[in-house]
Amino acid sequence: MIPPSFVEQLLARVDIVDVIERYVPLKKGGANYLACCPFHNEKSPSFTVSPSKQFYHCFGCGAHGTAIGFLMEYGGTSFRDTVKELASQVGMQMPDEERFDHAAHAHGQSLIEVMATAARFYRSQLKTAPAAIEYLKKRGLTGEIAARFGIGYAGEDWQSLRNAFPGHYDDAALIEAGLVIQNDAGRRYDRFRERITFPILDQRGNVIGFGGRIIGAGEPKYLNSPETPLFEKGRELYGLWQARQAIRESSTVVVVEGYMDVVALAQFGFGAAVATLGTATTPTHIQKLFRQAERIVFCFDGDTAGRKAARRALDASLEQLSDDKTVRFLFLPPEHDPDSYVRENGLEAFRRAVEDAMPLTEFLMRELRQDNDLTTAEGRARLVHVAKDFVPRVAAPVLRLQLIRALAEDSGLPEGQIETALGLKTASGKPRKAAPRQAPRTGPVSPLRQLLRVLAAYPNLCGHVPFEVALALEDSPEKSALLALLDAFDDGALEARSLAMFYERFRDTPVEAVFGDLLSALENNHYTEDTATTVLSDLLLKHRLHTVETRIAELNQRMASRGPNPEELQQLQTLLKEKQKLKSGQAD
Image (tube, rainbow, N blue to C red; front, side):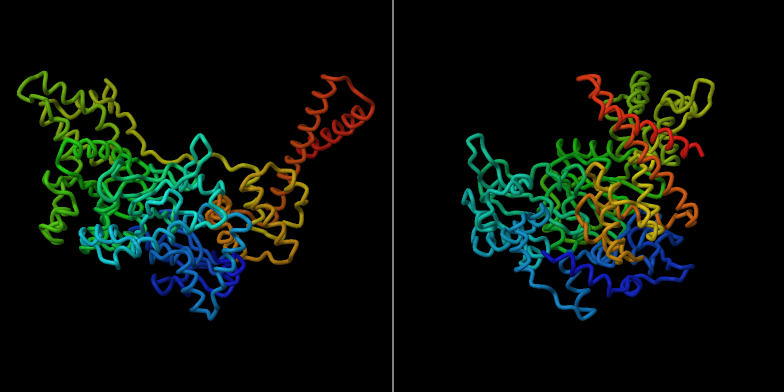
């Protein structure tokens, strides 16, 4: 683990404009620099780089971060390798991580650190596992590709992770991370045994879970990490971290079914493949992929199971579609998976198959026509009836019109009547709104988040916020962020680039998201210092009023249950006077 203090010193020396300009041409625009975003396709620039805040933000896709985050996202490198590269560029020597890791063990490691330690251990075990090495060689994998994907091996010992965590195998973090199982008798044992391990990485390159492929006979053939605070199967995709550059270059991503398919395709030169993690494709998967690609191609076996998986992927895609994004379906011959297909037919044949994949509309219409005899009125009526579950959910308006036209041709009905039958128009012919694309809802900004935004915009106002206000708050990421700001202000160390440093200090914790929001919100800051001061005063007054009202309610409840005493009556009287005064000030 790299000490946070080293990361902050590094960010203090690095200029984010210099770093990003090596990869993206920037143009000066006011106080910031502008460019077309390198993380999604766009024609007009929405990517801004702030030299004062040392932070980048894209108003199109929402990508944001520090110089470290940019290099990780753009180059597909890990946090440690990125820090090492930047440090060498500015002449800083990397700290002794082994000594710092020992101290981290003494104080308890975070789940991210635990997973990284396990991944290193599994990789080291692969070197001494002939059966696993032989299996990978038979699948045609080189040592280079195994290293690129961090492939490792979990041995047959029931507690081999004791060697990775000497003296710490009983830590709760190993169970929380899904590495260790504890039975009813209290005995612990490793989840992954006699399996080749495939680390699952998040969007920052951190190991958040593992997939394990058994060697030889045994069930299940593949085993995934359980749901943990780090890992949620319905949100993550195997290989996305390694595939990002290839996806950007081709604007296409191919979704396959297994770890080995992803790795084998990469071995043969096709790097833009990812896999779902033992679960059906979800709308979140589609949203994540459309942020990086214009075209998603689902690649499935041509058997019944493959068609069912394709149907689920189709269902997840409908509400995420737009007219400038496409989804296609590639069905391989029954005797092939992507691995065997590319071995037998070659890389170019696979690329042509991806290019010629079936458009979503064709697949959807084929599924709708299935089992409907269109030579009969009943079959044509059932076609429209079945389509009602799908077509109205298509979020792309022009694409939806194309489907309505196809249904009209198949059913022999006018397009207007099809729209009415699908519920897209009322009987009077007035259009109904199309189903909206699913997107996370954002609620109103809380008073505490408002307070943080004011302080982020005008750090000198931290001096108006008593520490007692922050300490009295319930524990939350916002409270931690507020305390960090107030501490830095008291130390005289709060400056424009401090928020970016806090962002990195709290990396991979809920507090990171708070500072990300603050930095992004600064780009839309409409406060003057005078209005910010007024807002701050109002927020502090509301906070004090809430505190007083809570205390009054507590005293009333206590006196109602056991009777009043003189001291409590005096407190209540004082609080009631303060409440009246505060309300008067609020009215003013």
